Length: 253
Image 1: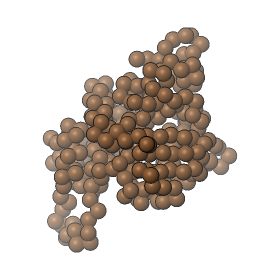
Image 2: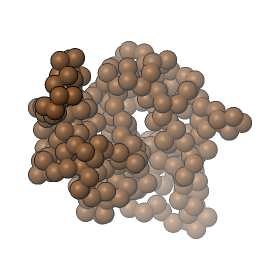
Image 3: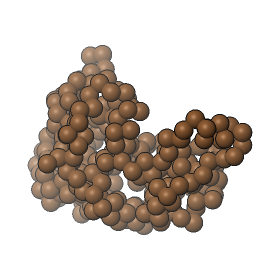
Image 4: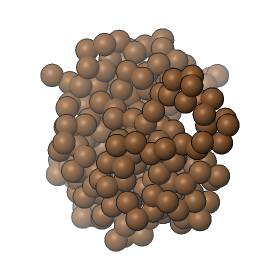
């Protein structure tokens, strides 16, 4: 049974049909990749299913319908996401950034923070830092860490909310090869722990190396889907995404 299911997702921006009846499923503990050329609709899909862009179609998570709900209510039901920009609260520490995501504090906690008592990182935040090998950055001001580290903290922040499903929007952007490989190892471990994950990224080595299933978009339409080894050599993918079908070359491994 799928943990997450998006059915016939349709998005239009004026006369542009950004997504056309896109179907996608992610099972519990499954890591699914969503790839395609620039402008294919990958981030639009994440925006649509998380409620940030109006869309037609149906979205369900753990058997419960999310369609029509605003983003914060989808998040509270267990659907988390990351952002390409990696925005953090620079006046907080890394651990405090995670604590903000991990907690839905009662009114008296908010009053305490207003009076200067600060934000405390709980077990969920600490656990998320450990999962991504970031414990040593917990006390560092967010303004002082590198762009690559900010991307990793963005993933940790999504995990801190203990979601059922995470949509990752280009988490490897800004990472070097070693950091990307390490990220892939951590993402695979998170998925294996039971969290459903959707990975959008241009790092083909990362996506094809860690995902169980890959879906390919072109101009808002699914043109291929299947295991990485199938998608890697699909003629439609080679033509649309990699542009190598006329030469007979394979996708990069």
